[in-house]
Picture 1 (cartoon, helix red, strand yellow):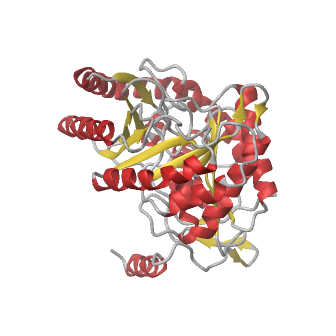
Picture 2 (cartoon, rainbow, N blue to C red):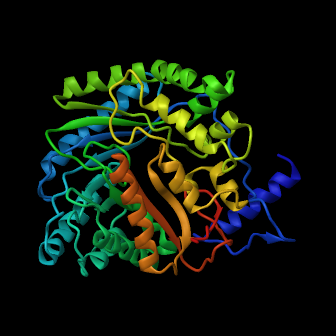
Amino acid sequence: MSAESDDRERSRRDFFRTIAGTATLSLGGRLAPLRAAPARSAANPLRVRTITAGVPLRDPRDLARVEAALGVLERARQRFMEEGYEVQTLRITTPAFLAHADARTRDAALAPLQALDALTTARGVRVSIGPVLTADRLDTELAPWVAELIRTTRNLNATVSVTSPDRGEAPAAATVAARVMADLARTTSGGIGNFRFAAIANVRPGTPFFPAGYHDGPEALAVGMEAAGLVEAAARDGDAARVTERLRERMNAAFAPVERITSAVARREGRVYLGIDPSPAPGKDRSIGAGIEAITGVPFGSASTLGACAAITRALKSLDARTCGYAGLMLPVLEDPVLAQRATEGRFGVQDLLLYSSVCGTGLDVVPLPADTPVDVAARLITDVAILASRLDKPLSARLFLIPGRQAGEVARFDDPYLTDCAVMPLR
């Protein structure tokens, strides 16, 4: 390691003791780059991001069902590992059994949910209980309850649904979701609780990715992939005009054995096989931003970025494998070093991410915003996501990461294995 690299690593360790850093990005009228260099895909461009078990749990005290699912997940992980795959996480989704609950019922459920979290966390498994509100109504007691739930658990996830069957968007529910995000920014260290909460729009059961995932029906099994490296590999393999075809070929070849393994495990365990969510989720070493830049030849956010997003989505929508969940392009700003770098350089903004969601995507995912963003402004932004989802009949979500103590343009730094340094984005 060079002296410069050594100094950079020492500096990063110093800063990573807290959730947020202090440096601003203005430097002589230009944006200073982050210390972390943009990631590039690892030698193996594919890992299993999650094996997710759907459990028909109606009462969080029914731990026998949970214990059974934990065994299934551990055996499934072992099978994938025997086949040479890296499995990043194991997860459980439940029905939205608190979606219509009143404040008293929610309060009574808090202790059992904390016990459920303790059990599953001890086994290295994450849980999502799905939407705790599905009606378009102002529930003034919900935001502090969700904040307490997230604050007192380690791996429990929850959502608020911001679309309704009769109207499409649900603006009252969007206001509730925005209040939850504001409360989480205030009550969890560095606002980290917003990593486990989202407003979901038109998201159906069976999604293996969190925090949006929830379940409906009998015991089931699904997988979500971390396949951003396949996008970059396909883009670097030849003519950009044929990237959809090449990506489809690569994904079909990569997902066929994954489907074979998962469906075989599901049959053996007596569970319904829901499919693969092929959304090319990135990691710190597998950047979807790098893949898109390999297609366009210009920095993410430049003209032609929308076209590249559409090309990737066309491949995702035409795969041979059974798909579930989003099955769309993920652009999680804080999880992707290249996206974070381009956001820091001011090459794209929140409205651009909304635009990209119209042809692909999962919505606004881990987007860093100032914690003092007014609730009504955040609610309108969430409603915009809901309108897109309902008009285009596609699943989208909003996971707004409100950063305490940081204004737009200042760097937020994270001591977290899944998050990367990024400038807080302005919300114009």
